[in-house]
Length: 398
Image (cartoon, rainbow, N blue to C red):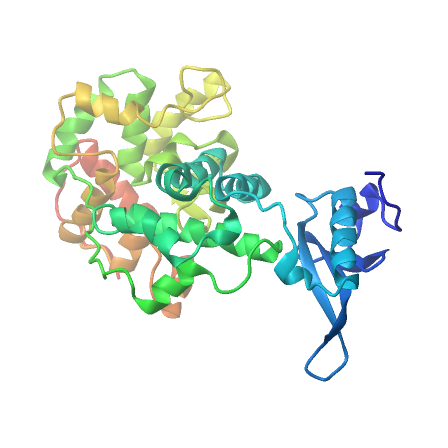
């Protein structure tokens, strides 16, 4: 079929701003304020009237401009107009090329790549659907998926793998919502309908606790760490002293460190809470990281490859080599929290903010600005205890 002519060009389709842009013969490119682009065609169906008795004029979605090219949109629009001239409503007579669920999910992932916190998160997003949705509905056209198909994916894992099932449900909903916005679906989202109707049973979430070392055992453990030269040992010492999450420590970069001010500022994109977190660097922490600067790496704790961070498993494997049982790397956060409460008698807000936990009320959030030096004092007392200090009860001012 020869390409049809119109006002738009490929370059215009890619660059036009928000609004409705006509190509001619009832075809329009609609650009949303978000930048999403989709095709619609307006036709008048011969011999049919609307509720007011006027000729039936209807808009039809032809799909997103990232999926449907300009020439494809023109050809489909021509097909719709031909039907309308024959008195056939395209809504009931058109045969469209509908992508499968798997194809469309991959497209959604590609579109959202710039928004992921990191490449790993984007891969986890699609892997969840690959493992639990694609085997059941991956080959089905995205417009044919309803509540029964969604239940096929969720029911087998709803109680046994509830957290995973909730992630699957959320990602199914996103894909189907985007499919509707691009004109491939209509009606309600079946995931939302299932949730609203309470079709699936309520599951009481089991709180996952990371095994933690007793605070009384930490000085002896830390003394053992100090005898080891491996980078994993240095990272684990730093993790223990800061009470930080594994990912925050492993991803620490030198441009986040102000050694003169004794401050480590973890940017929002690397924090679980999506807010920046300031960690006071005590002399014990500085003693660990200052010698590492000589390596001139981007990362504070460099892995085996140049300018690459230490492996996620490095500290856990070190614990296993040290034959430490009943404790995880993340568990040192709990160890610190118990010590701060039972031994240091620290105010709850100071201890919680030291761990970058979100605090509840507006008053407590306002209190955050006042706690940096109080947190520094608490972390220095923790370091003194961990590195062989007296461990005596210290009461912090409230």
